[in-house]
Image (cartoon, rainbow, N blue to C red; front, side, top):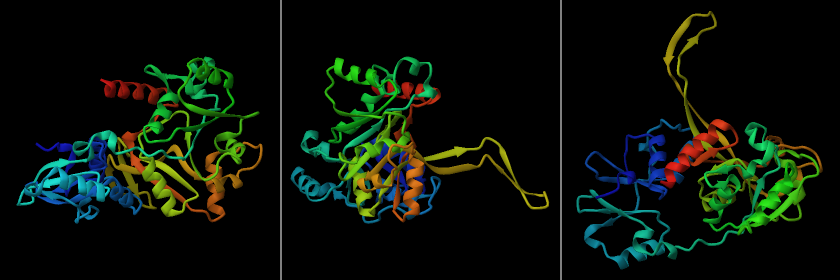
Length: 355
């Protein structure tokens, strides 16, 4: 029996699709009608393109899915044929249909091969972790510990961040440090850390972008920048591909959010007369997640030895005519643990996932 997290009806919404993709972990859905007849496929790339074209999270998927999605008939199903298809084309999933095009099952790489045979190629893209802030929103923890060492379950935040990159083939980490820098170094020294880390110490606080100038001789091409209180589930290869194809100077990884205003909203004309009341309207927006993919050329825009934040860098880059891209991700893929309420929510979610 097919896993329901791979199936979506054509009249369902983008936000419903994003939740299903997040659950099935294969970046793709099979679009069907009411009888489970296959109509096409919907990938996370299709959703991303739609969100960047002014579709919103409540938009129906019927105009954005791929109506020529690849499939295989059950009568033609052999392991060798599946191997050839997966090796020839970079499909995430492959629907299995009966002779009436009804979806009976779905297969994917790890069902056909040993999961380890789909090699995780090493990525040379380094990750700069901004770990120099005082963590004022996380007091009293940060009176004693630097924010990156605050624990989530049995590991500090910083280890969770690095592990999410390591499983995708990235192992080169650079820390910009300032507040309680010696405690940071001592932790990784005393625990005999398996992580490859290079420290860049600020002599004074330089903001969320200013310390990158200290890396101008180290960073050669593209590199990720992430806040030390940000946990994200992302596909680094997809982001790198998007960034390079679009020729962006900076790509912002943004969480697709929907906020429901819990009131009736009055729409009023210039005379103060009511036009209509909208009950509990939904607002859709893309929120910067605190992770970026940056081209080395951006370092030239950062002043020497001055406090300079990422919004300033982005604003200056736009003024100079550089391209700034936005790569949307599902809201459930992003955890901001830099404030107490979100920290507690993240703790609860990760406990559930571990169980």
